Length: 452
Image (tube, rainbow, N blue to C red; front, side, top):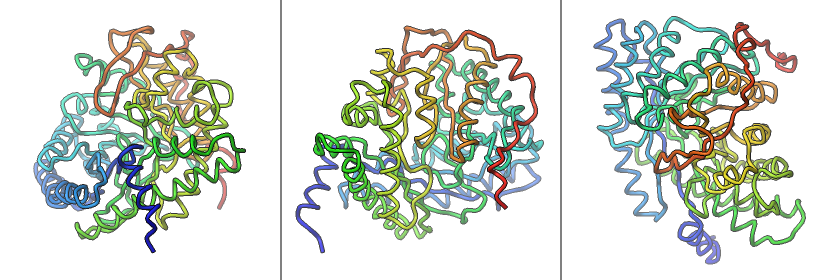
C-alpha cells in the first residue's frame, strides 16, 4: 500500500537531493557477428547494435517524463572486442572502434563500452593487436570506452599485461594531448572485472550474458548525505541502519526503471547496480557523506573506516530491495567527479596513498586521477600493479583510471567538463619502479584462490 510520506520523500530525493538513474545500459552480444571477412564483420557489428538498441534512447526519454526521474545516461556495452575481432590487425581494430563509435552516434547514446580484452593469464593474438590499437582508437573516437582485465583472484596478475597497459596509458595521453589527455578517461585497467557492470568506462557485455540485456545503474550520494545529516549524533549501528534503509529506497527506484525498460524494449532485465557515483555538482559527493559522519575532511584518519561502513550498508540495503543486484554496487571515489574529493586533494588531505587504502573497502579503485604528464610508463604500471594486487588478494573488483596530463604538473589542474569534472594534478613518487616492472611474468594467484 502506498504511503503519502514515502511518496513525498521520494519526490524530495529527486528534486532536492539529486537522486537519479545514472545509466540505463543495454548489453549486446556480438558473437553472432564474427566473420573472417573484415568488412562483413564491421557491417554485422553496426547492424546488430543499431537494430538491438534502436528504441533505447526513446524509451528512456519516455520514462523520464512519465516517472519524473532523471535518466542521466543511455549507454551500450558489447562483447569484449578481442573476442569478436580475433583475426583483425591493430589497424583493423581501430576500424572496429570507429564502427562502434558510428553506431553510438547514430543511436544517440552517451558511451559504448567493450573495446577491450581479458588477459589475466596471457594474450591471444587478437588481444595483443587490440591492446596495440587502444591509443589510436580512443584518440579518433568520441564515445568508445576501453577496458582490459589484467588479473583475477583465480589466475593471479599478468605483469606483462600490466607493463603494457602503463605504456598504453602514456601513449593514449600523448595522442589526446590537445584535449588534456582525455583519452585516458575512457580507459580502465581491471582486476576481477564484472560482466554486468553498467557504468563506464568499464562496462562490458560478458560472455555468460544473454544476447541482449538491460542493466541499470542508480546513484544517490546526495540522498545518503541528507539521511546521514538527519541521523545526527547517533552511534555507528544506528548510522549503518539509516544508510541501509535509504539504500533500499534508492534501489527500488532503480528496479522500477529496470523492469519498465526491460518490458518496453522486450529485452531481459539483468541487474540493478546501486553505486553511489558522484558528480562535480555540489550536494552530490561521496566525500561529503564521509564528512557528514564526523570527519573534518575526507582523507583524514578514519576515512577508510567510514567508507567501509558506507559501502557495506549500501550493499546490504540494495540486496534487500532487489533480487538481482550486480555490477559493482557500493561507493565510487573518482577524484575529478566528486566536489568533496577535489577539495580534499587541493587541501592536501587526500593523497594517492590514502586513496589506495580506501579502495580496499570501496567498489572500484583509483579512479579519474590526474597525475603529472612526465610520469613514466613504468610508474603508471607500478601504480596499476599496486591497485590490482588489492583486488586479487581481497577477491574483489579493483580498477585504475589514471590520466597523465601532457604538459601539466603538480600545482596545476585540468578541466574535463561534464560528469568527468575537474582534477588537481596529484604528485607521484619520484623513485623508480622500472626494474620491478621489467621482471615480467605473472604474480601467482593467492593461496585462498584454491577453493575447488
